[in-house]
Image (cartoon, rainbow, N blue to C red):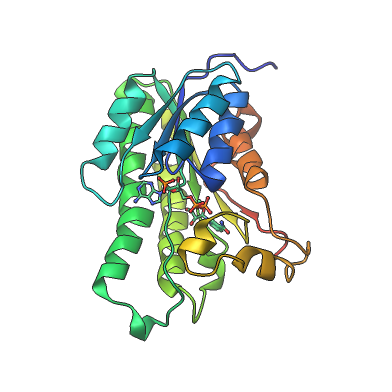
Length: 252
Ligand code: NAP
């Protein structure tokens, strides 16, 4: 069965760089209009918007620092200007430099859980209010970008980050059931070592390339390889998939 060309609007948090940028372009290629959320790198977000438009869809960048309480309202207001929201990719996430739990302070933990968990919950709520048939919406799909860390715990590196992703996996499980009869599927992906700039922000730019060699597939993943899984989960090809979390981690 062919997919309709107009699929509505996909909101991609952290859509300006890395995995989110690849998700934005992959969804545009499939016909979604895209709202590219970002924190501060407007040049990167604008490049993604252009790449989406080259695929023949409407796209706009939306600056919204998810550490701030009003950011989600601003982000979805920008999305609403594009059309009806039918996809949310909860992708924005932060890490912090490697530390043991006895070295973590309040500021670090507050940022980690605000951006990785609280904002993802608020975005999911905003998406459900728009997509749920219970609210008169058209249905849709939510994909949470978790991490293999949620399974592994990341001892000595960032147990806080791993726990934040564990919270996302639990949200995927619970929300999928909560909205299953309201036209919304909720799934997750757990990337492994993916070659993006997030590792530099954690103080270890070569992390994915160095550790990627240790996984069964023997290399780090590419953002596009994660995006392909995210995009598939949003399509009708995944119409009987909900509450699932797909590992995209090279066998790790
Ligand atoms: P990245 O290259 O560092 O890109 C992060 C994106 O998130 C950027 O667009 C950034 O905006 C945005 N962002 C960060 N903090 C934000 C905030 N407070 N408010 C709004 N947007 C914010 O990261 P990535 O590697 O693509 O990671 C994407 C997701 O995959 C994250 O959830 C991460 O935990 C997860 N993941 C990544 C890996 C990996 O190895 N790369 C592995 C497992 C899971 P700006 O461009 O404006 O800074």
